[in-house]
Length: 473
Image (cartoon, rainbow, N blue to C red; front, side, top):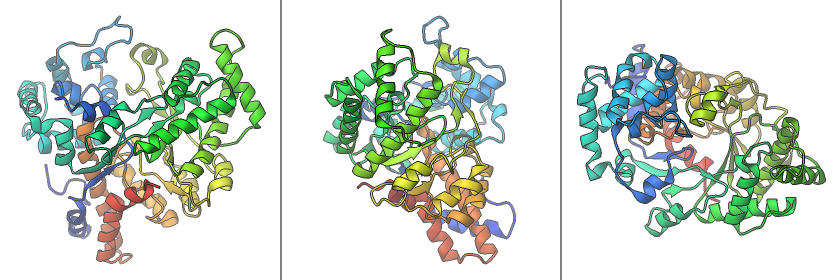
């Protein structure tokens, strides 16, 4: 790989970008928004094979290959009910991936995977149908080495702290084990309560019951429902958690009258056993908005950072999602409005010293029009890094150009990687550091920043801002 990859091509800014990038290249990684399973670190068992590590869990990769004719079973993903089994031979899955390598050209997925293969596993051949077996053998041999177990890779990748994402009913047993073994300050839990805030979820009542059981609260009313949520928040915080993670369809935060919310909750719980009519989608959306407001109120009290990332039509291919499950590449962005949607929460808590919210989007139109102006005035709000479909070189550059003039750098979260693909974490952070170095180099070349300021800002974006945005209270 070329040492200047993703840096500016023009001869004026490239040398400046090189200097900025080299100053931050080796800074520790702060990975505070991700989805690597906590079990990997708690159990610290070897990764099973190259396909299970690099192909099967990567929905960025799955979607691109499916778009070109591959099937999910060919890529190692079987039907939930077993009716369509996954390809059982990991080498066959790997061959299908390598045969489709050309379809990744120009995508960030290509950049991340190339970086992983070369810098982590020492691969020197380009993936293809012809090289698939040799690359598989090389990666498999590396995975057999104890130095490639999850905990060892934390050190190799330079990860100072990493957050997992855990459901509201999590017992946190794996995090407790890590804490007992001295890793509690390095692998942190993040509470994801979406399932128990969504009244029309088919598993809502069961999920609420599980959450109550984990919290030691029998949920029989709106009051005990809130009590269980508060208790779980306290348990997560005691285990080292610093944030909650929310993925509503829309970011509405309009509160309801508590009596109306209580009636809706009661109906949703009774509907699961046939004792009441199900809530309507509109009622579920209103309750979800109300609970985002209630979550913000709880956050102002306990200081867990509230991450909000709306605007995704999840499982767009409904039949495929029912068959193969979520997170298989069929999540598609929608347009989102934030200014009015967030006003109730920001009116109430936007200047509260104990409240912090980080908002992410995949609707680029709102960066300059809404989110940068909001983050640029409310002390409690930070603008999250480009996320998901925008986690790419060109989109990250557009983000800096759209947001910086209004929000500055200090009102952003710094980079977060938002990935299930553990080995892609250093590649994603490296790409962000290169893109930011290029943007800052342009400001230096245009005499809008001095070089020392650009280097300091690059370090903020790569390291200091994520630590500050997710600071423990």
